[in-house]
Image (tube, rainbow, N blue to C red; front, side, top):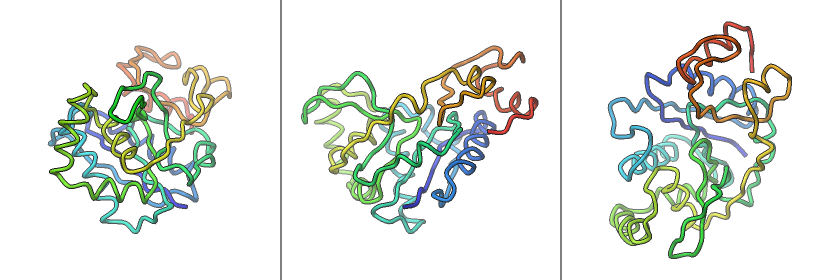
Length: 230
């Protein structure tokens, strides 16, 4: 089983993306096979909200399948720039019985298929056979899904919701990663030898480890300043 990762990033997030890549390599070896970073500065992607952004992310999935020899039992990992990996445990828990693995939302949507909750866009593992089925969905069917399933049931069209939904209708059974893998205060944990397996740095601190910063974008520089390797 191999992992093929892709990340949508931008100039503002470059240092975070570099940290994500470094920690992914450090903790996912020998499973990690490829990592692709796509610069979204000149695209409609923005922060991933809306149907056009979701279609760009779906195209990113298609490109991974087109460019690499991804097996049905391998996983494509869609991962945000502001994720850091701090132990191999999350990768060791990957289970090929599940078509999509990630952090499931607490508040489910009402859909034509009943109550359903999407995976966070922070990191989402999609099994190869499910990804291939998603990639094969043609535009006319995607348009119909948007009108009948999303607008018809008032479901948010963000990229994480859309990819999760497409995986579900393609037959993916979902595995929810346990909160113990990522729930914690990163600043506290990194200074008290209490690191979990990964963190989503989706917050805007003004100080980190005693250093003044302007949001999460300053965290990689502080870690480097302090000589901390994750």
